[in-house]
Amino acid sequence: MLSERRMENSGTRHGKRAWFRELGAELAVLHEPWPLLVAFLGLLVLLVPTAAWQTVRWSERQAYEQLAAQGRDRLTLYGEMLHSELEKSRNIPVVLSSDHQVIDLLAGPGLIRDNERIAALDRRLQELNAEVGASAIYVLDTTGLTIAASNWAEGVGSFVGQRFDFRPYFLAAVHGRPGSYFALGMTSNRPGHYLAMPVSSGGRVLGAVVVKTSMDHLERGWSGGAERVFVTDRFGIVFVTNIPAWRFRSLEPLGPDAIRALKASRQYGDEPLPPLGLVPGSPLTSVDGRAYVMVSQPLSDGDGWTLHVLMQVGEARARARDLGLLAVAGVGLTALILYFFIHRGRMQRRHTRELEERVTERTAALVEKQDELVQAAKLAALGQMSAGMAHEINQPLAAIRSYADNGKTLMDMGRHDLARENLGEIAALTERMGRITGQLKLFARKSSRSAEPVALAAVVDGALALMFGRLRADGVELDWEPPDDALLVRGEEVRLQQVLVNLLRNAADAMRDQDERRLSVRVAADGRQVRLIVRDNGPGIAPDVLPRLFDPFFTTKQAGDGLGLGLSISEGIVRDLDGQLTAANHPDGGAVFTITLSRAEVA
Ligand code: ADP
Image (tube, rainbow, N blue to C red):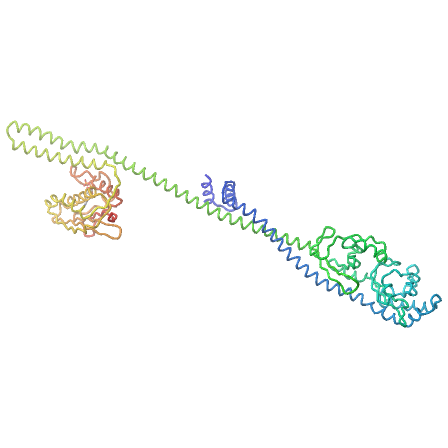
């Protein structure tokens, strides 16, 4: 059913609709419990997710590596920017720490300071601050009290009179070391970097000069990039960043020691310092539900500072997922195409097999039918022939009857010689009748289809022996070159002789009116076939006779001379032996009959 429908479909393929119909038919077989289909589906189920997963993983890894490389470039750039920002004001405390105006002021008698000198220094610091673009420049005494400041004129915002003795940069400076520190301004509440230098004279520390640098400018510079940049201090707290919301957040929750130290220095005032949940060192990290590739680098500036760059992976991930989808589609499509090719091949093979089986079945049925038909035809012919037989046999019968009646009378009369003659006639007539019935018996016989190796020379010799009387009586000149006795054909000796006798008799009949009668019997053998050729010098076969020559009851002979069965029976016998009987006219006149048989090997 299915295969027929498919064949129909492929036969009437018209454009897209037909294609879809065919695809439908293809898909209709998908529900068959089919090992190939199951194997394919299994393969698809295994292969597609694996391919997708691998592709996504691979392209993600590639993307992350690329992002990390970009991030490392950015690290260098942002590190440089930070360094140069700090560098701008780095020399100011160095220069001021050896400035006479500062030293003289700090070296002056403790509480009774010269207001004019302080005011002069205030103005100088103010000018200097404006010049270098720092946040503030100020001078502290050994108690951490601000003596002079660039922002002296800002009223509430002024550092003058403020005490910064708890700040680590001050503590470093009064101990004769430069101090560097990032913190939230106590007065200004603005973050900045504090750089302090001790002011000494005669080996004694008199105080400190401090410059506070705002990171606003730097952060503005960083905010231009797509990536997130931040610097953490030794506690892991973000203090410079291009994401304002991340400022004063710690990478990880702070330990009790860190909290204590921060409280003491009031570095970040009262900021709650909530953790960001970022783990430094891990290549892929997420903050606020977004994933990043994180690269970090310790900085030479500051104490335990680390610069971090976060590269957003959203786009890279999406690209990787797209690639994964593409891989799924690719693998799926390839598998589907492969499946359809194999499926089509199988279907075609199945159709071929079915067709072959049908052809074999039908051939067998046909052969059977043909045998039946031949047999039926023979029997039908027999029926038809019965009518002819009545005519054929009635005549000799009537003659026998009258010869017998006459014979009785002649015997009564004592004419035994004449009566004997009559009996002789009766014998001749019965012989003729016997011949007719004998042929009929042969005709009705169903072939046994058994062929065996037969020596062709023996067949011809036997047939010639049977025909010897007739041929000699007719004065036929015989040309017969017997082949090697070893030349065997596949056949039946008696039946082949029968065929040959028939051909010889027909030839003799045909040559009846010739002055000279020549008959040649030749054997031509090639690789696998052997031909026996009987040629006479009679009138040959008329063109209108030729196509009907092998039809039963076809005869050109007088009634009583021939029944028209000889060639039809002969042809049937030869065909039964898997051979062929053909008739033709020789170009030099006369008829040529050829029996072609297969060569037989000696068993
Ligand atoms: P029949 O001999 O009884 O006529 P056949 O079937 O043997 O029946 O022959 C059919 C016809 O074929 C013959 O009547 C004759 O016309 C023709 N025929 C057969 N052999 C020859 C031959 N050698 N030369 C010419 N015609 C022939």
